[in-house]
Length: 76
Image 1: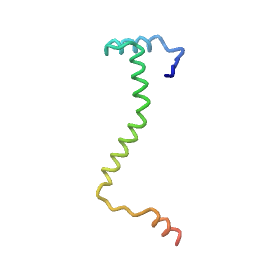
Image 2: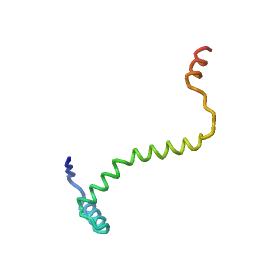
Image 3: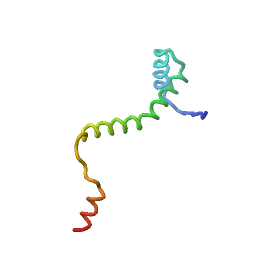
Image 4: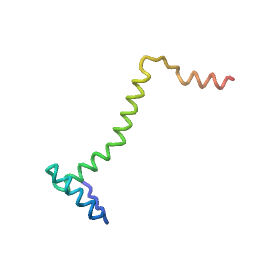
């Protein structure tokens, strides 16, 4: 597995992260690993949420094939 080193964190940030880890019963390393894993998934989760929302909004509608629309536009 890869390792990551973060330099020059403010002491207040480290204290906050340690407190967060302690409140969850984790080591600082375990807490940081969880935070990073969740952050790496965030973009994917956001995209899926938006996609599902759009699909629900468009459900039941009839959609024209875009090929037909492009051909129609070019024929003008």
